[in-house]
Length: 347
Ligand SMILES: C[S@@+](CC[C@H](N)C(=O)[O-])C[C@H]1O[C@@H](n2cnc3c(N)ncnc32)[C@H](O)[C@@H]1O
Ligand SMILES: [Zn+2]
Image (cartoon, rainbow, N blue to C red; front, side, top):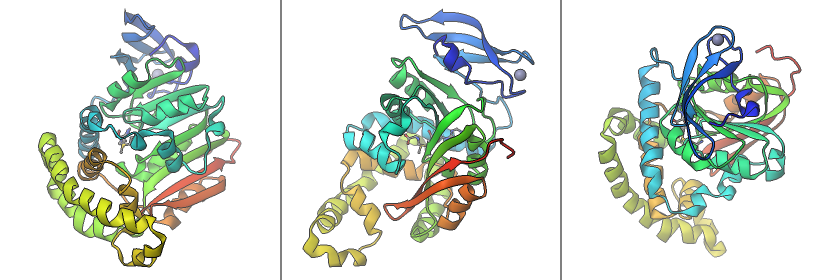
């Protein structure tokens, strides 16, 4: 993290919600980051370590076992599996904009932005490129170390490690919050949504992308028992090898059947007969390594939840959001955007 008052003022003490200040800076890097040090609460005096350039607000006890197992899996995913991906499609601005539709790059200009569950920081980086004034990337897993490296050249980005479901060490100061593929990996997705939107300024916007309940019966009834009983418990290296192996038939089927049928208009009549067509057609456009990554991503978490359209809409409408846009993505997930109309936050 940089000794930058604009970024420091976005943080707060998770214990008493007062300001924190830099207390010790033991190790300063040549590119201006405090690699090791501490933050101290101006009110209650609690101290929080900065390690590897990242302020750590990680509770030392009472992290639920399922949250802990889920973020360990994702830590491995972003630290090691992510390196496999050479497929630019997967990490481009285009795929980010697809996930936060209908938001466009101009929306980011001069905004204070939160990437809630930033993983390796691929979208934190795009938010910076789109002209945000300051961006916080927050994640509970070891992925923060990768996110820090990916964004350390950006003057206006800070990466922090904390639990977004219970433990947000941030001020209510954000113009825009996005959370891509994260809420459904927390024990109570709506509760986590409500925790993050409390950090919005009046008239602030939020985007969320979550797995849908609709069209996912086969995942819930067939895949999830296998994930819970087997794959989420496997040693990560073995799961990675298994994912590589499982991606072979997936790649063959998506490239040879779903891709052509999705692209050739005269074959459009066949689409309704094909299993999970929209999503598998989407997968036909990504490379083998990316498919391996996606298989790993689906099989590794302990916690994965599915939200219906009606419930997802209620997350927004019952929390005073207006200008709602809720759209399906690839037939199996929901993208939502809304603007918080409350002047005072009474949540
Ligand atoms: C599928 S990844 C998505 C990462 C990123 N949004 C992206 O699309 O590149 C889900 C992320 O949510 C994080 N996560 C899960 N539960 C969390 C929690 N309770 N607090 C903070 N981060 C959490 C995981 O560590 C993981 O990096
Ligand atoms: Zn405090």
